[in-house]
Image: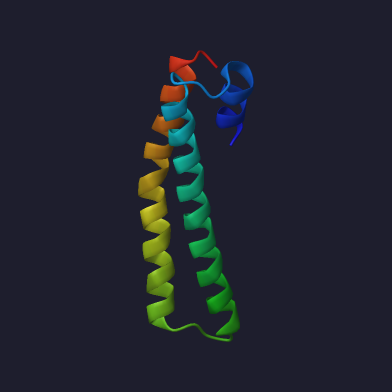
Length: 87
């Protein structure tokens, strides 16, 4: 994640920055996990062609909705670190 890298490059890993670096790492991990979840569902749906079951489509819809709800929190976390460290 760019903010994590920039903070680390500018300030290093210190007692002051460690919690912020951890927060950025957590955001990155969560986003990556959600991306992989969506990718796996998409592959499953593609393999089910010509038609995917309603259950699979519902799972994909739920995953998309959950991701859309998480994105604002991730953005807020990133903004807070940028503001705190004037990045």
